[in-house]
Image (cartoon, rainbow, N blue to C red; front, side, top):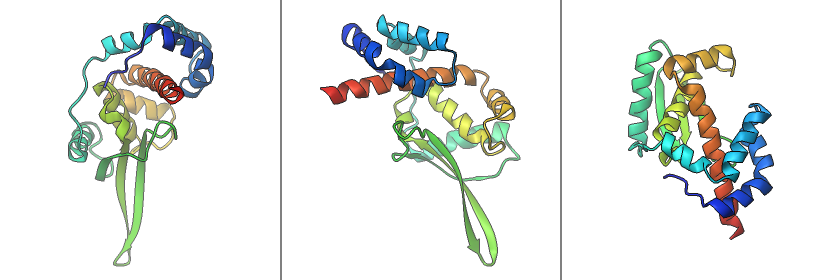
Length: 189
């Protein structure tokens, strides 16, 4: 669902509360870029810009559909990576907890052997997000099947699977910031 922002109220809200929120969502980016984002929001054009850039949603609403998307991308780019046993949307992964997705291995002893089951959990927030942002988080979690750390090799793998990964990640962070501003405003009403 696209975020709707009015010009006056959110501009004032962005000016008074954006600094800690921008630092939270855009901490690794240059201050000049953070200032540009805050300025676009203050002028009331940022949400519209994101809406124009990412107009399409997606119809991936079930765990089964999400699993199919993950497996298709895994088959194409990560054939030798460990098999995924489960992929699902998780309502417990929230933006407030700064957890958008998790890649876990659950180990169990079966018949004297240790078996590990790989799972990817993605925040249910992405059911309503633009398709590109869901793609970005899927690529991110799949990349963790091969590379655990967020290092150069990890981001190269992400870019191999999705050439626009870096732009999608940045824009997703901006989208999350706008969502946080909206939630802050809703809580003040």
